[in-house]
Amino acid sequence: MKILKTVTLTLILLLITACGSRVPFKKQQPLENSALVYVYVPEGVTAGEDTQTYTYAIRINNKRYLERITEGEYLAFNLKPITIDLSATRSQVEEHKLTVKLQAGHIYYFKIQKQDDATFTFERVEPSTASAEIAKTGLAGSTLEDENNNITEFVNFNKEKKESKKATTKVPVATPATNSTPTKTKASQKRVTASKLDEIKEAYQMKKEGAISDEEFQTLKSEILAK
Image (tube, rainbow, N blue to C red; front, side, top):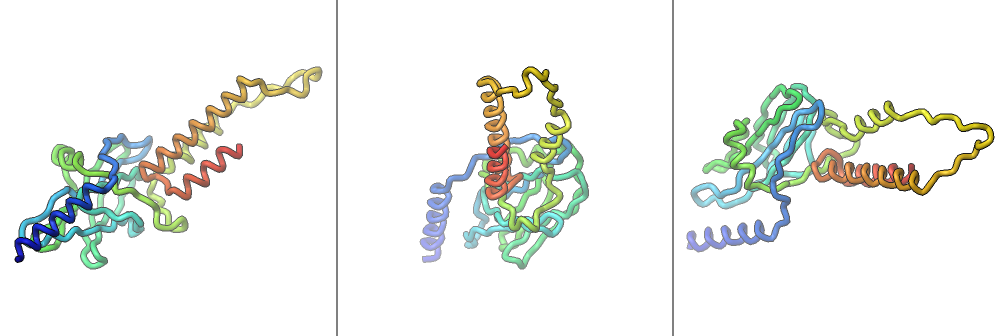
């Protein structure tokens, strides 16, 4: 009877996993002046009768993400190159915390591993070991829990790009008095439209990578279109 129950639970878990729409793992490179941090949970069921799938909450400097991570999933964060406290919590009972000093341009891997006794471990893993494991996972997603409680350790890629564009914007040259009312040509209008589309695409990519939330993306898109 126990064997039948275990097999049934395993099949249900497999069906749920198969029906999911996880985005397959895609290797990234750190954004400029940031460190790329991966947190992942390898796929697989532990030995014994514990077939339950657990979920884990991730905190960065005690600020929690709304999106949880479970078996066969990963999260990716571009963070400022500072010292952070990174922790994983299950059911608000068991928590494991790591302190790591991040360096710009570096990639870090942290693995959550369920144990046979229903506990779990949280440790930093070498790239040579992590690469094969994380390649089999799918994106869990990373929506910020609260706009007023944003994790300030994130590199605000969009803001830096805006400031960079503002600094390099050319001052328009004054036109002669005989032609004081310049009109936009069709070519000029096309360039402006293409620029807006590029900015929207960049914002959407940041949303997919978890750098901004869906609400922030919609707000940013409206600002771009209103220019």
